Image (cartoon, rainbow, N blue to C red; front, top):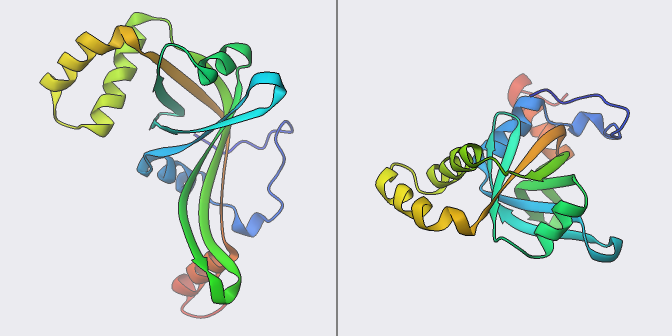
Length: 177
């Protein structure tokens, strides 16, 4: 996946702090939860913490069959998803050493049964690896009672604190840049 320079999405204002596409994807691959933001009831933003898995330019989630999140997805397919990789508050410096990623894209409920099963297996293996028999039993009993959701990433951006940028530069060059 490549970070797109698309006029639909704002360019990052502090470019020095922008993570590369590979760094951003690395964060998505490593983390296990983030915040999914949708257009909720009455036009209010609805942000919900949720577990996920990243796979080949897509994010996958599972959900109950109904609820605020499901209604929001059915009403509007635009969404964003944020993952915080680092959040190290430095009180004496009045700052936070952070690293985070935001994905923008289109989200939908997966209807195809073969695709639902494939994605449910990806999710199951991410959170309970090497347990094929247990996963098979869980999916036999639970797949009919859950939704599988796909988020197609259209734009991905990552950012880190300027202090971390400077620390990387010092590591690379052995002195301040």
